[in-house]
Length: 231
Image 1 (cartoon, rainbow, N blue to C red):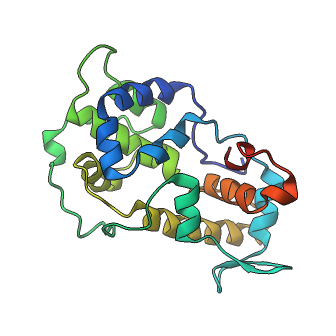
Image 2 (tube, helix red, strand yellow):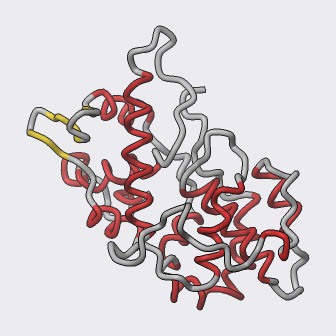
């Protein structure tokens, strides 16, 4: 499979997203992620593999830019802001520095249910019940893993816990910088696979962002309608 990790289609997680949103959207707005979460309602699996691979071919790991015939082009924080709604300001996310203010042991997160579908089933409480802090943090963990950074393992890892609980606590984390850095790293990895004997396989990371970014900068060239440029 060429693209191993892409945001899951809107089947299982959409009901959970809408349940959490109804209760916690004020927190999302204060943390600056409300607009970004809305992207998770769209099926980002509608992508153009040839377009993505062609773009990756022009990615230079040394200059960290696409060397197109027209010149050097590269994603910026302002691009991230325009596409996702994330602000280019805020506290830097450093895994070793961000405090775990809500200890994992004080939550009811089930860590042995790691796959996306199993994690959703284990933490999506019944409709009509109160959304607890644990369920909200669990949702943010799932969202970061499956919809934002698209983890290679297709699992929900513990290392996003501190970020999830920080967003739950309305911390103004500069998620745009972290996303851009992850985007650059996944472009580096994707570029390396082009030169393997087996060819590009199992590409992971936020490559969904590459599709949206290309749609945006090539909107006029591709004659896209305004909505198509971002979906």
